Length: 327
Ligand SMILES: [Zn+2]
Image (cartoon, rainbow, N blue to C red; front, side, top):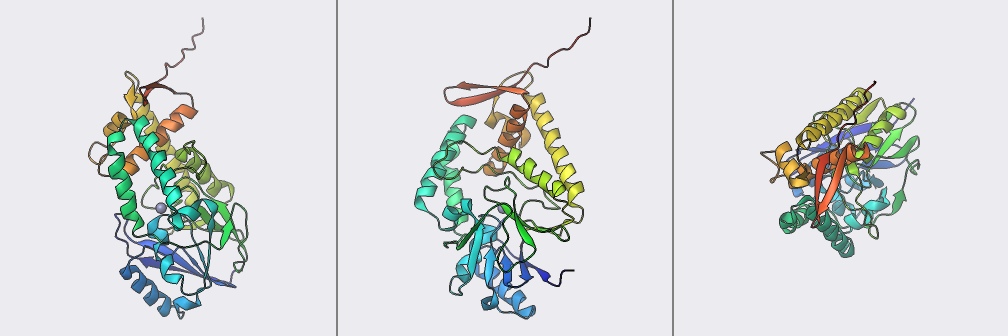
């Protein structure tokens, strides 16, 4: 029997995704999960809704951040004058304090990716776009670093589930007694979450295979018997296991579509991206390239394509299907 209450607070964002949900949990410690983007509108809205619930923002004792994206963390800056504890996974730390050394590593990482995809010329603009998003993010120090399986002080019954894929360093909170998950952007009802290509932690160079990670993290929803997901955007997911199966299936269908595209000729990542997303590939380059590269990773893992490098650019082609003939 859970006596604690979870309140969904929906806040406006300046982003195409629309409103973001943050969650206030009335537990041993009054806990906020995610904070919203750093805008005055979002702050006013958050204050108003917390007042309406009978609290003040200064009553909030701790903030758990699901991942580092600005629409989820930016308002954390407004909490620093109240002595809240910020809790998140280690990967997010340099993002949350805008560490210049990390962003050097970040830009260098994307330069390699963009080169391999045949779109080096878009790198500079893409990095400027990221900097623009960061205006809505925060500059905070994290107090408590958590990882898979950790309990959180003041939040009895909840455990941290690492749900990497949409973002590196993405966590969800799971209440084991009834399978309720607060899932950030891990599983969203009305849109399929994008497994964004993001840099590995500083000091590492290998590109995280984000769609493969994401598929593994989706399986945790089934393995951990999650019954309901409070999502970072939109309504709660009431049948999360069914939605996971649908998401996994759609990814496999998209991988098959890509395989057909490269059955006759080898194409670059960018050429495949243009064929997949003929109208929005350039406007949403970060999203569309992540989708493309993620599904190529899936095909590669299943040994269904070969990759050839020419002058730093990668070309992808379907492997011949072996013919098993009985004589
Ligand atoms: Zn996100």
